Image 1: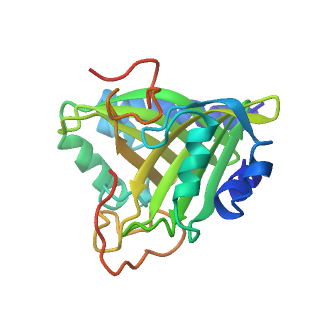
Image 2 (image 1 turned 60 degrees about the horizontal axis):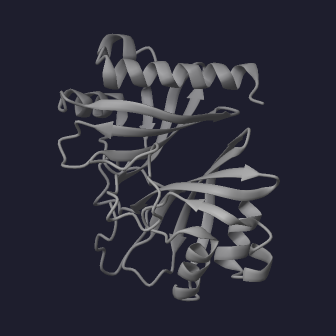
Length: 130
Length: 132
């Protein structure tokens, strides 16, 4: 999963990424269009500054869940995502996610970073998703 | 396959969440949450008290369990929160770090549950059907 995400989101190597994503990929994300094409086309539409950083990761049986940060999307804020992947025959077959804007220290109720060990600094923090 | 310890951690997390969010048994829930609990959530005030007081302020709150996974000292729960005082349920991915059988650190990601019209992926964010 980490290699697949790095290939698609950071290296943007779509040909190699096709070997990680099933052509029958089922998408439960509210944000991403259906199928492998829906995901790949979304990445293609995002500026080349897109960066994915993985955080906590847990794998069990056919499922992997990874917490990560998407930045450089051309939005005023970063996104923190929990991505749940179902793996079948070594490829990604089904996906669920939960996405939230990465909050600043001022916005955070807990006053501890949502991701990693420091808060983001935005020139103009504006809400995008939940 | 999860180890015996990982399975035990998962069972404990499910019991703890049911105790706090559904049974609202705050005294029993104290056994699961460390007093030094570190909270990374954007929406929950710091510490065990911050979490418990937030739950106290939402009498209709219900937590529905989905996928639960464990690896080493981490447990991740995929859940649905209703009665959250908002027009929509929140879908939540919860990440918990355990130490000596209690939660010591927590991260989460919450997002309002998408309706059929809003869901770009055309499949429900949660379970087999879209919310009404």
